[in-house]
Image 1 (cartoon, rainbow, N blue to C red):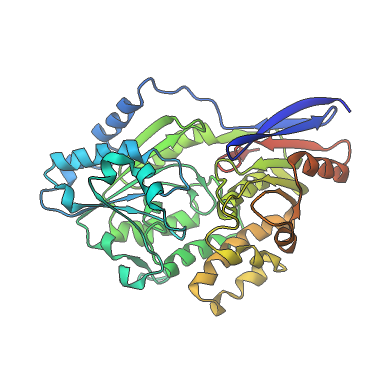
Image 2 (image 1 turned 90 degrees about the vertical axis):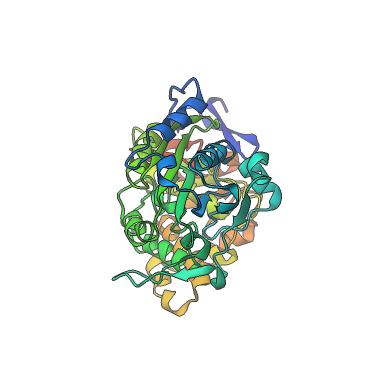
Length: 424
């Protein structure tokens, strides 16, 4: 058989080949190429010098104040080791001593970062200079309950965050399943929230049937910003937009909503990719969200945006750490529907509501599409029980999908499914 199109699929640290047979209509979607700034350091300094919606950081912090800096974790590619020294040096200029600065890794419900991971994330200068700790969303003794907000769930936030005089968020802006885009107030909610609050965040997403991947003005983000980030206080953010190659494209700083929205506009220039039509078969890699299935599910949302009803989605995801931090996540996908699954939430403790909610959101995709999975980190039996079909290679999965849809099938390949928003 002759082949007309060959695509190299990012898969962890290597590439997986995929050949599309001659005569098959194929469209390849990848993040947009953008013109990079000549000096990334100057880009960051400019963001600090001219923040959006707030005074400069040096004007916000005062001598003797306690400052908490919230950073994202190992599942994100934010170059925190380059940003933190700039934050700390400006705090020092404002008279804040190093001993009064605490860095918290905002895990949400992810696993704690190891010491070597923390060192790589913050860099040797900060690691040896400041106290850096993981958030602990299951430790109620570390949490403070906020006063009741009408219509809101119980809101618990890390006590160390609430006790600070100034709170700063450092992170990246990427497409996100629930919040539309990461960054901004998300570093607080669910970043340093208690388990009940993290579960409520994901239940908000699950109860809205819309695919909100890449949609910034959505109910989850509105609730996140109004219920928590504004109530807790997030005085300053530094957010960057990265290219898939790990370069900084743009940086924003300032108000957690105003600066964030400015950053989202830049992120859309990179990650919102136009496609000509919905396809019968969509092949999407999880890259760069390759760590576990909890992260890799983002690529299914990307595939859902590009596939027509009854189509086939092929998820190519290494999932080196298996299912991820919530082992029962895959089990909940066995339910008949998202709605039947959500009806059980009032019977569940928060630690089960959380994976149930995320499973419900992805269950809608599994019911709309035929989902095939290529992954070395997930067992064939557990994938089948979750309503998905395992295949050893992307080529095997594509061949099976083309047999199902016939010679006139249209194929779309999304090379970076973990961070690409198809716009059809």
